Image (cartoon, rainbow, N blue to C red; front, side, top):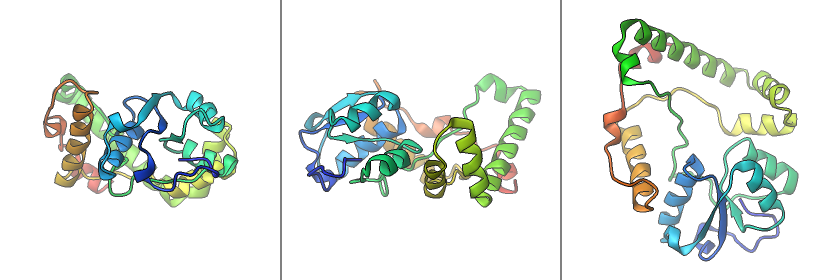
Amino acid sequence: MVLPDSPLRGRDQLRGRKIAVAKGSSAHGQILLTLRTAGLTPDDVELVFLQPSDALGAFKQGAVDAWAIWDPYFSQIQLESGARAIADGQGTANGLSFQVAGTAALADAGRNTAIGDYLVRLAKAQRFADGNREQRAQSWSADTGLPIEVTRRATELGPDLPVALDDAVIRSEQELADAFVAAKEIPRRFEFAEFVDPRFAAQLATA
């Protein structure tokens, strides 16, 4: 995101610029991949590691040139300041989040069943929310105090739906992990596939 009067029009113009981002976040990963598509590296820009609440102020005051951020902040800054996106992650970052369970829990029959039940409930809730977007936006606004215009926009931009842990997802996450390794944010390479457990796939497919 850049302010409306920013001279920046595309990702290829980020060289030498200050970019606010939360360290280790999905937005950090998006920046690493976005820079790569522009033929740039993290050394070609100045990454300013700030959490969203601090980055919001820095961005509005012009202390940074760009802000890599997710919703609802993405929608909030557009509506409040007229900020515009010069890169939205399409074709680079997948924007996925994951449910994580310990190996001990997965090995325990009782807890394994409970995890499966939780995942099914979560998938049903996500699908319900996607089919009732106005209700979701209203609840989100009531719970957080965000303006309804912000939660409506964020709801329309980013429905959260269950995604199969297929080969395409694994490849995409491996690319993201490798980008963090190349940027020396992760000390060594690892195989993302080794952390994927598809045992609940059949349950989720029919949830």
